[in-house]
Length: 414
Image (cartoon, rainbow, N blue to C red; front, side, top):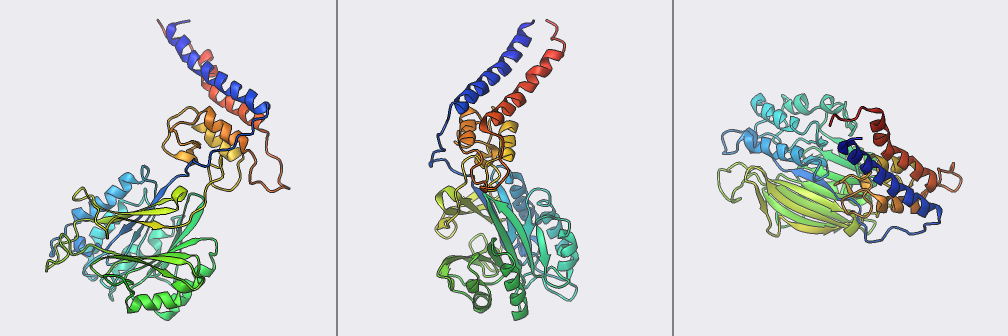
């Protein structure tokens, strides 16, 4: 046996010894529960404020600002766990010019395979030509699993889904100045999804400095305040930034946000200078019940950290069940498969990857947590899952397979 073969086998023998040792501990009656200091995974929702001047080549904005914005979101999708991106309307400046829609189409296509996203028509997107629905109509989204549906035959009002950290979300996007019948449709969508946490996206809603505009008041009174699972409203249209919280009819807070950078760089220049490619990220951290709101321009490679551009919001979220990698409320075979798949690997996925103690590795410590919580959350009449001993025996077999295969392969030539 060559030194190379001995080294290769030693690695896998070590793995088997670790798992066998853990197997003995579990069979001996391990009862330790996961520490309450363990944190579930965070995730991010992005806002894409008015992009109209990136498509209109006469105002100082450039398509490159738009391309770099969506490109950054696509590039950061995995590392930042970006679960969804919400466009706030005014996709283009001149709705009857196909050239502007072609720019927007290219920019949004960059997200297509990496980040689920929603769109809505602002006042600058609506015209008799209806290029909005030609480029961003229902047919563009019908094949996407995250797309929930639309009102009537157009995509002017639509809803989408995403899930993260054991929570189901619904993004409800409304056209500029929605009618009462549209708000009734939207209300029915929310009522049909009582277990979803709802974010309403409206092109116009808040004023600079806070306070709702006339359209915002109509949306609040006929939709938002009446549904306790609506927890956030995001909007653009008014050049500037604001955020506030309002109390719905159930006595709970609703977060309301305005973001529109179309007059950047200084927000005062006339004519506008394009927008500089700014976007917003909202990082949800369930372990802290916080949302961290930030503003970044990939075009400038700059974070803006002043009060209106970076702040923290309180938002109650559930803690994960220790060992429950897929957040389905039960620790079972599916979670064991995740642990086995990532066994003795360095991971960045935290709880969802099987790294229950968040030390960056999936190892015997994480297996102990999973074993101690095995079958937790299962209904008392459910079919029993395998015992922790059987679970870890299967894990042992998984990690030993590469070693077993190596015994059947010719040894490297010395």
